[in-house]
Length: 511
Image (tube, rainbow, N blue to C red):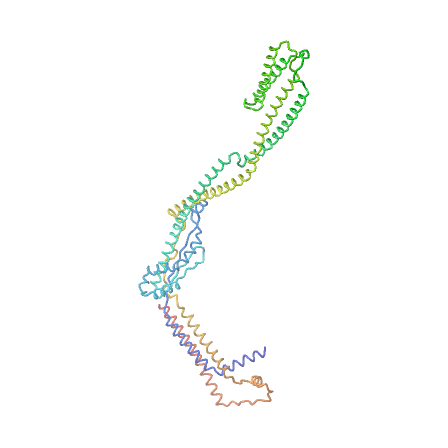
């Protein structure tokens, strides 16, 4: 710590040796700086405060019915637009500033200068803004602020209406497109339903039930057909063991009564079938053919008896019964064959249809999904159109945003720039700092040994002794005179600073 203090004292002693250079530099800096400060032209600031009221009575009443714009965001955007080039050109025309600009270069310079002097700031509370402008002419500054205030209000009122109009046109275009898409989807869905009737979702489950029923009926019909074939084959084998004719003495049973009984039984069976089916049903057709055969056989027997009433030989009743039974079995087999073929046809159709059901359901789901999306978007667009229409009515007939000018454009009599007392003080302080810095730099450029420590550090040799300087009365008087002269020069600089500050205060009060 002692070494640091000694080093600082060494620097101070070295700078003290160049103190006259420091005073000269301080005077030079102050004279130049004060002259520059006094020559700076005055600039007057015009300002106005405007309040944007977004909490109107209609806002809670129309909540959810109309589109609520982000007023705060619009205001921030408008404040940025006030320093845009179109706005600056409009302000220049409104204040006749564009008349002075003769060339494109002058116009650009004028617009840049105008933008640099405009200030739009938050006034410290919500939705309260301050618009200010500085210029050498107070009247021009006031005109610029008034123009900006007019543009601010006009832009805010017209922007929302323009946005509503653009939104309405866009929604109308989208509604037309979605209406066409919705019509196309409805037509496609209608054609698909007509083409795949009975196979739509909710109806396809009957196909699987019918497929199972027809499959069971087919198996039962095939089983009945096989049983009928086996019975017919058995009857044919029995018929092969019987004789077609017998002697009259052996015939003790009248065949006519048997044939009549069978015809009667078959007619009763056919009556029962007609209660269930039509005459074209295979069972009814086979029964008819069997009855016709029995009646034909009965006629043949009657003809034979008339031809030979006392014949020695007659037909074998068992043979006749087997023949009739075989005919019935043939009819049954034929009927069951037709039934099996019909069930096979139905089974094939249902199986093909059941295989198509998943694909039909997939296509139907896709069609309905597209239709639902179009329908939902179309309904949303209709609601939004009504909301935009109501918003347009509200915007055109009411004020959703109220602009209130709290303070109209005002120009104080005191210039806003420059702050001469502050600048004069800074120049004086800067002159003193510059003088000290110059004295220090000169002392470092031409170093001198001020004490024994510095000499020992510079040479690196041990110090054996020192010769003291004896001050005489004359040398002391010269030293005292030089110190007084230095203090007088420094004091005159301070006095000059005080005089300039007094003059500036008097001038500012007089203005």
